[in-house]
Length: 191
Image (cartoon, rainbow, N blue to C red):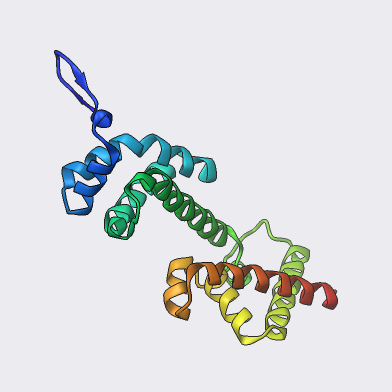
């Protein structure tokens, strides 16, 4: 939207296909108009997953940067909105998973960190859990072990793992899902 003292003009009167076509050809002003048109939808998509205003705003910027890089891959200009929301959804999921991985406790770091509130019983329970998870990981196949380690211990994103394992992101997601189930089963049979 452009506003001056006399009137407010929206670019939404401009056909979407023309704007997308111009943006695909490198017209940054056209891409700026697309941002103005879709920023609320992208924010809503991201916020729904993250539930954090500042983090959602930051991720929205990353979504638009990613979209600007990948706009050449968009086949149908009329699908720009859904294409953009799917990028936002995937990036929000990755961010939420990364946040969860960072928030999860790495037992080695926890043990080395001095914390007066840890009782000997708590330390023993954490040590047993850590050892149990390590034994469970050893019982998994190499692909499952590498996938879980990369995601949860190394903090790699799905995209980074996709590059590292030379597999599509969808395959990485499936591997993570299957590996989690196998680890849970391994831990269940151990306990």
